[in-house]
Length: 116
Image (cartoon, one colour):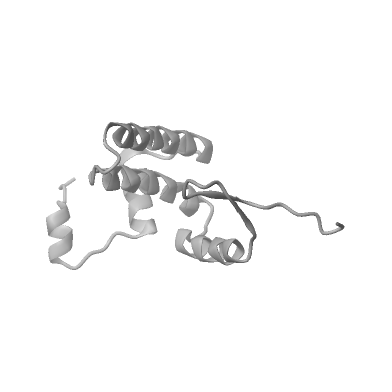
């Protein structure tokens, strides 16, 4: 199998998609169940955390973030969904939630009981 470089992909105007990334991962690593893929995503997340612990402003962290998304694409593809669609749907929910701020730039959604 001939390896294709990122530059060769760019020259023909190719942009990676959830489907192309998932197909590449399955061809390269073989099939995997969603739990195993999630475990691998957690390992990639740990690499991101290590990167940011060393230097919170390290611009290379973006590649660790990309690794996490690349791995997660496989689960989403296995589930027959679009990650972008799921993000759009989830943001609609998030925009309509009430949030308890933690004072450090993060927050948690407020759970409420419809009966109260």
